[in-house]
Length: 231
Image (tube, rainbow, N blue to C red; front, side):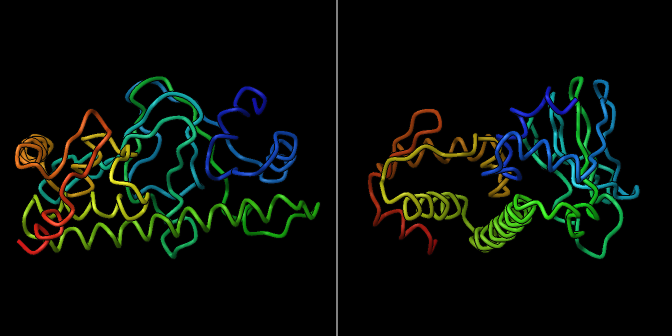
């Protein structure tokens, strides 16, 4: 079972800088649980007991929640190598906060939280690397949520888009860059509708602020972009 998915696991941020042989040895200590799922079957259900940090090994799945009105909101789509459940793994919560549903035949691995935090009997050096990777992932998620809250305080859609693109410019140090998110993910992140965002991006191009092709963006007028933040 492990050998079938080693390459997928190595690409996962959770196992960054851990060699294949070390990964196999570590999984022997962690004793993960592997489960397969049919298309449309729920991998987790909100409110059910938490069973460990999940890692999708095969297939594709959606993470969703239901609103008070009973509407289903898709929060994210995950592919092999993506984690789920890491945010609550070491919190006081003991139930899954969201639904994870297989969109096609899928395989997932669950790492018991006790195995991650308990001292390894073999004193494996890579166990420390695993914990460091996990802490980095959770910290990055927290920073992203904090940044998202900053964007939500901006009233205009153009202002939110400009703030997001300017942050990418500062992060990469160049006015031309390729976004890590697709249009749907960007719209969800900025809490705007995809069609409205696409229209606004088109207007920004017409106004000479930016140019773009697919996921590649080029900022043409930094001053105008910064002025849009105050609107």
